[in-house]
Length: 273
Image (cartoon, rainbow, N blue to C red):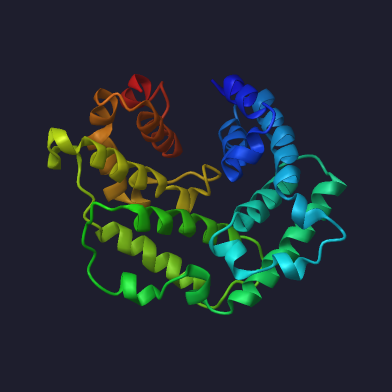
């Protein structure tokens, strides 16, 4: 499956079309391939090439980074992901002077963007207390919640780099958001009627992205004690995702279980998936 993914993303123009999704898909082979050194090595090599392609505007020595270092590049663009993946590649791959330079340029652009944002509120694009200050109420439109989850994972990536000047309160916000998620009433499969299965799928995509906030897109393991409610959701809705013939969603469930340390050898659901 990974080789098919490599071939697909290697097609002409595919990186430009997919953007950061291309980098995330390939580099996941490095995150998850610790027991498969060939895949891990290939993921780092191809991931580096994709990083350079996506980062081209930031790496152009004639480009004034002040023109690119805008708050919107972090809030609405892919700069946060690029700088985080660049740091990961530098830490995991053999030394590469071009990667060092790319990381430096991306860090400089990120810091300029952070200065342009000025405050956590501007970086987020909303007032944190307006969303987290009231008891969570489920809504069928999960787009805002999904965006907050992905943004939370990106913020952790920024916080992990000591050379980035994140706004005051960023770490507290992520902690408050994690606590908010633990109280959010995500409905399970049994709460939906047959005509609402699409809503179950979309809701589950949000839930299965939540672990990335603490795992950094599979870079670190998550433990049941980190979020017992999340593990329970996966267990209770796993076979519903399988029987609903949503292969992408099922893959998300399996990926989540693997992040908990489940394998085909020690876990029935992971093996069934």
